[in-house]
Amino acid sequence: MIDLNGMTEADLRQLMSQAERALRDRHQQRIHGLRKEAEELAASLGMTVAEVFGLEKAQKSMAGKKVAPKYINPANPAETWTGRGKRPRWLADALNAGASLSQFAV
Image 1: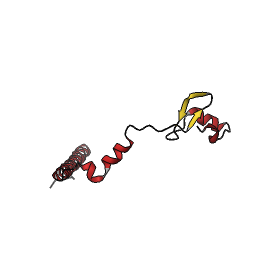
Image 2: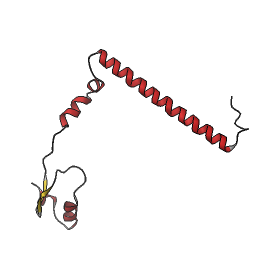
Image 3: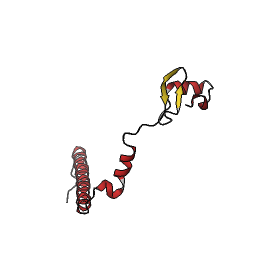
């Protein structure tokens, strides 16, 4: 047992830091062990972990696919927006000026 009363503040802080580091290391070791177990179990079934959880199919289905633009800038037809993510500045400025989103539909 450690006598905390006889320790200085600096010693206590160092002990806390070491304990936190040890906890993080143990947590990472548990995660690594669980991953390895899952991979071994899946491999024994002739599968990958991604296949077991249905992740591989979802990733493959969207991989490399481009989304068609839904909106176009009439002032510069090279500027388009798919409707996903943050609105481009040209569209945000036009909407703030009172334009309707449907005016920019492809």
